[in-house]
Length: 387
Ligand code: NAD
Ligand code: GLY
Image (cartoon, rainbow, N blue to C red):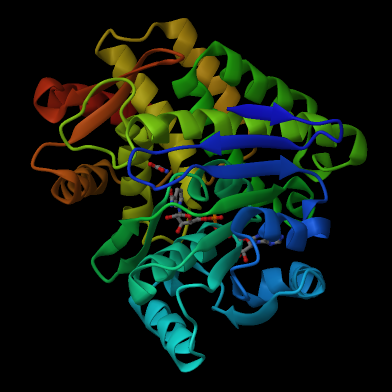
């Protein structure tokens, strides 16, 4: 369900079969200015204490404003800052956060608030899911990726030495507040990475969202997306993107293993097999995740074309829009043999057989078992993207 009010604040409500109640996603500009009011509407006054989880880079910009607003609304507020970066989305950080909660006697009627990108959001959501077997969690995403993807849908977790997101839980937040104004301080590369995920969701959703995303990219440079006269378009785009993600989550909250239809949550992994391989073979140092997914979509489109699922025009359309997001790090020295090895690693993490998320058309994803995709086609597609 979607609502719009005169100040262009959008509200999307999301219900999943397992969560006890629906939760709301509020999207607008300058919403941090009424953070306390939103918390009160979302969890009420039964919650007395809030722990704001963030990192120093984000907290320096938004923390004081957020905390003082929450205090004005009558909440007792503490803060816990993790170190910045993917490698700190770890069991170690989780243990420190849980220790802080115990030492400070947080109870089940208190709540956690993630103020940050996907790293902060995934760690906070997971801590909320396990502390006292579950305490309320609020998501306040501050990167484009976390606004349109990670804060919505309840996937939480941390990385281990064996790989990314290997320990976690499905745990829906009580609410999500998206203040698009925070994107004004986001580094350009992070915006590019987020827009790659936006193109991905557009390519899965259909012509309407794909065109809306492409039109936005055509008419805005990353330096000006939050300027006042552009904010409404940004709010509209994020609203459409979140609505798409919410629809997928409603249909298949837990990414059922036995589903391979076009509405399965698995389709959100479009571009990820090659993307994960790129991240792995460059030891997570060269690509932001979204950038790797940008290359991954082009690889998946070539593979779809080689398998005669997708036609040349659609491939070129997707390729053109991916390139509008900005410069992606080079693939020049990537060794195809290493990529093929990394595909095997992805296969072991997912199931015995790799599943390829491919496209028949923009908006028509299809999931194929690795058994139905000849390795000669995979090698041919690799040659196309690495040449
Ligand atoms: P991130 O959280 O690392 O944030 C990127 C960088 O931007 C960080 O350095 C951060 O400090 C900085 N930053 C954040 N907001 C800022 C702002 N407004 N202004 C200035 N700097 C800001 O990266 P991300 O792309 O948001 O998230 C990536 C993580 O999300 C990965 O761990 C990935 O696994 C996870 N993820 C989870 C899901 C899910 O469904 N749970 C989906 C996609 C990705
Ligand atoms: N980002 C993939 C998912 O939420 O399922």
